[in-house]
Image (cartoon, rainbow, N blue to C red; front, side, top):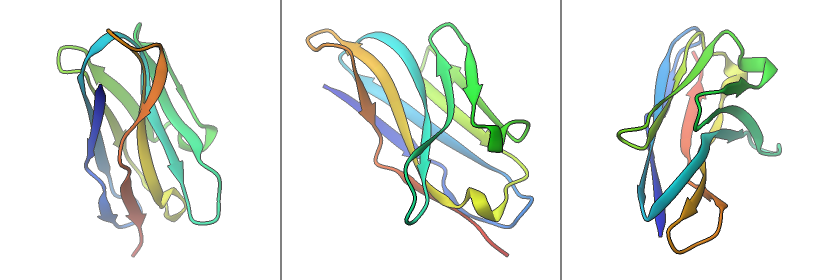
Length: 120
């Protein structure tokens, strides 16, 4: 079994910064990618940022130049550095990991979600 544990959300003023972390543990055979989606009230869940096992990244247009995703392969942990936050970034952020386990087929695993609120 694979578990994802997120941390780092909270309340921040516009223009401020937060860093999210997502640590994966368990029976991991192959990591394909990790990233974050976010979901605001009444809206669908959208991709924010993604990083592959090889280090390739992609971002939603709305966060390019403000958010940076990185990964520490030795710790099976991904990070999302969020700078110059805007009220429209307010959402629940969900970490995901595209993983093949030792005894399971390739699939997406999800974290518990962390609230990010940008407000003055």
